Amino acid sequence: MLMPPSVRVFLALEPVDLRASFYRLATQVRGALASDPQSGHLYVFIGKGGNLVKLLFWDRSGYCIFSKKLEAGRFVLPDVPADAASFEVDFATLTLLLEGIDLRGARRRPAYRPPTFDPRPATS
Image (cartoon, rainbow, N blue to C red; front, side, top):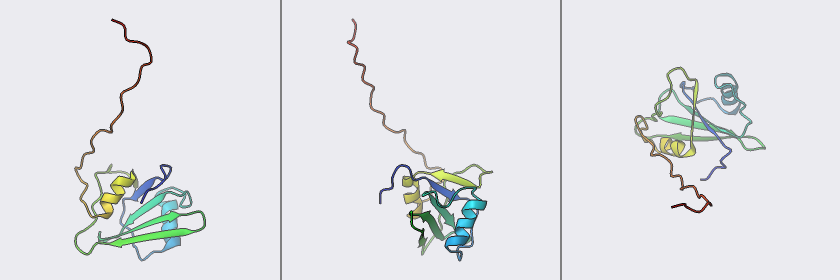
């Protein structure tokens, strides 16, 4: 699944009672994450047991929830600042998290940057 580059992904770092549905999760986004749940961004909540995750997003006509439960193991968050209430990740990190991959200590290689082109002729 590809997401537009304008969509940001925020992880809620405090465990949440995931019996909650659309409006209670939207209230969590407003309160604990200090964000607008109708912004079009993805908000990720992990349950208290660590094996259930819900994603809340607004698709211009209403709220959507995606839910996943791991049958074995727990979702493990990447290393995050100790005092943060939420943490922004990219879509690739979210995909790995949803696969149940432990991201603590994972390192990302530097992004490829093509060499810059200098239109001036080289001098000898």
